[in-house]
Image 1 (tube, rainbow, N blue to C red):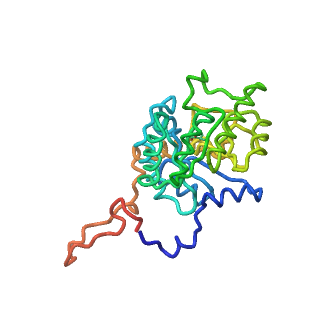
Image 2: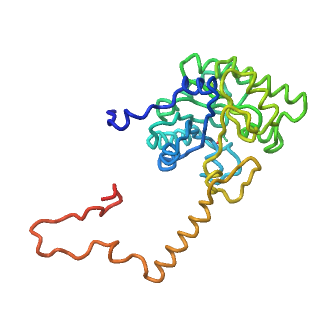
Image 3: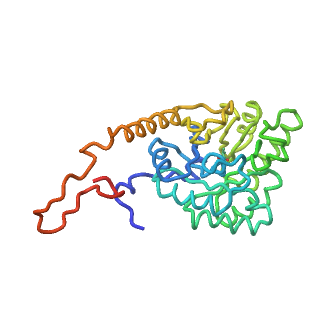
Length: 296
Ligand code: KIV
């Protein structure tokens, strides 16, 4: 694929760049994305990392957990996100049971995220138990982002979406998981739903960047689900989310205005149409902007 001059001017965020951000104390901004238009918006906003999360099962597909999401579905969304970005590092999330059967299964699926999905790395949930798999995938040259603490794919084992590491013993287990993931070769680690002081301790102990969600302010970076930060989710309101806009409400109001204007005949106006047939034209003249293509 040939690049335009404009594309060559934008430097892609890479694995080494993310590692060096930790060393320099520069915070990493990560946001989930699932389609090309949102990816473009978030990329232009300056997000360092776009995660094509299996959270798409909940916010895009309307399911009540991430468990039914398939490899093919995440790859489909990865491809769309990859088309929409120029700068952000793209991470594809390995869904439930896409890597647990064997390191070979993990490697086969992880490779698909890069080769077919256009992702630059994969993420998988798990600590000590996942370490041999992470090692295998990393050895094949595929960068792995780990994910410990509250791991949504283990929702049933945890008895719900519960904060992890609250007792001294549980905190040690989360720390041990984090260390195992780093030792296995992961280049970064999501810390989800753990106490703030535990996240700070893990962040200090690791040389790879930690990216928190519901893990307090001391991580090397933060991640939010884009539908949450844009105020598109209506029925989920976790404490750790900050809504930077209310797009559901403004979208609802805009669509309601459109519906009213269609009913009243206020839309479309003359200016939205293509005038009259040019009976005197010698050949067929196509009006620009006549289809659902680039705006003309
Ligand atoms: O699937 C997802 O969106 C995630 C983030 C919340 C870290 O795993």
